[in-house]
Image (cartoon, rainbow, N blue to C red; front, side):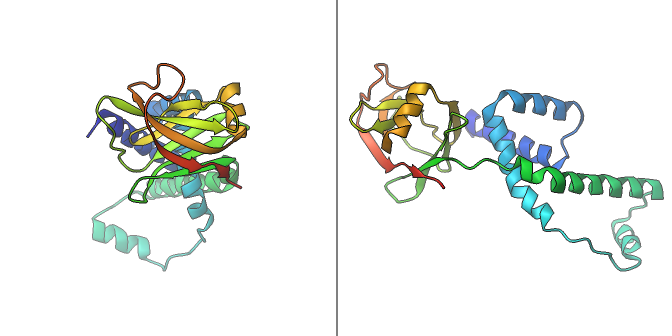
Length: 223
């Protein structure tokens, strides 16, 4: 597994444990600092919040039949003292209450604009999300994107009547997030399409597409 893929998997696992509440102590504190300083980490945590909050909201309280706890303990050879069982139950109740109370406020924002770029087989290669108010661009790549050796894919906005504007190098797999400059925001506001070209590693050295354009996709309102 490539280092980038391992990093993405580790980040996803940490974000899931953070949202579930199983990431504790110093690890939780470090993740919170990391989230506050990284839009990529914040997006990952928000996705898990969006996935798990509806599950918690759909839970209905149920009273198990008498003796259920004793049966479970007997089958699992467990013998927890009453104080420990009470503390564990209280912790779960507090966690669920927090999810229900704060879940709606922590749901991930919806993008303002969206472009889906398919590969030659018709599968989604990249999903490009534009967040106008936050001045952010997020590119998600669910599939491994094969590309020529020693080359990168670069994303371009195609404003009407103006030169293409680079939006950054595309991820081979995983996610790429970046802040948008005023020039990039203006270009996107005037663009009905996005393009992907093949460029030297690290992107075009000239600020213009130097290699072949291999993908073009419409940019539409996400509402």
